[in-house]
Each structure stands twice: as structure tokens, then as C-alpha cells.
Length: 198
View 1 (cartoon, rainbow, N blue to C red):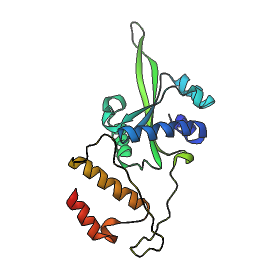
View 2 (view 1 turned 90 degrees about the vertical axis):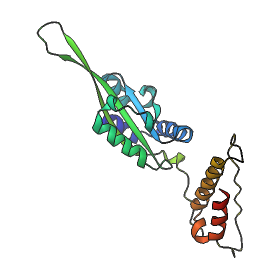
View 3 (view 1 turned 135 degrees about the vertical axis):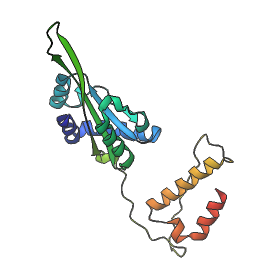
View 4 (view 1 turned 120 degrees about the vertical axis):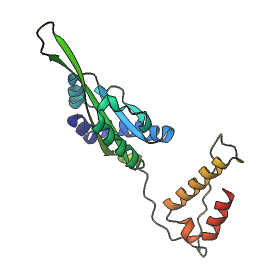
């Protein structure tokens, strides 16, 4: 599992593929992890040797859909912690699982035991997918060259709905924070009026 994680981290093509999956998953379903499952150690070895063509089909799993009995309580706890704490703009969580089948010694017929060996890690997104840092701008009312920011409402959400107002307000604050503007601190009157509206 460690070698699989290391291969993903070091192979730019694989990292880009996983990063795309992580970004799409986060944007459509929220926080979670990319799961890469290998049905045998040989398939995991083949991936380590050949990279992306032998990766199989990684999937995005929302953190709430993770199964503790699949990975054991300690790894489950660690995976949840990573899923709840990573920055989705710059990082992703990768969960690797390899199925190992081994012979169990018995006095009678041969018995086989299936065991899932798992690891997880927080990785940096592929560079082309990391949004460029916006320089912190000192925006004031007296700015000589004011910047106009046009935000559209989310499609499919009715405008009279209080939930839609909350989402829009959060969206406004996020976009302004990315530009170095704290609505609450720098424009308290506007902030209060928006709060009253929401």
C-alpha cells in the first residue's frame, strides 16, 4: 500500500488523474476520499511498475459513506480525520486497499482467508489543478481603480428560499476572502445589511 501511495505521488500522470477525480468528487458530492482498490498484491505490483494504465478504476467516496468494517477502527478514524480536515483546493485524500488471500493452516481441507490491507494519505493536488493564489488586495471605498465582481446565483435554487440566501451569502464571503477582503471587518454596515437579508 505504501508503494502504491508513493507511485501515485511521484507519477505526474497518475496524480493528475486522481486529482481530477478528487476535484470532481468534491465539487459534486462534498468532502471525501479517492479509493483505489486492488484485488490482489500482484495487481498492486503491476501498478507500481507500469503506472496509470494498470491502476484499475479508482472511485470517489463521500466521507459519510466510508465503511468502518471494511478497514478497521483505527484506519477508519484516521481516514475520517483526513477527510474532515484537508483543504480541497490544494489537497486530496487517497485510500488504497489491497486484497490479500492467504492459506490458513488446518488439519482438514485447505482453507483460504481473505484480508484487506489498507492505507490512506493526504496528497497534494496535481499542480495544474491548484488555483493560482490571488494577491491580497487592500480594497477600500476610496480605491482609485475599483474591481467589480459579478456573482451569479446557483442554478435550480429558488430566490425566495432562505437556504438559497445563506448559500449565496457564503459564496459572496468566500469570493471576497479569496481577494483579501473581510466583509465583516472592512465593511461592517454592508455585512449587517446582508445578514438581515439572509
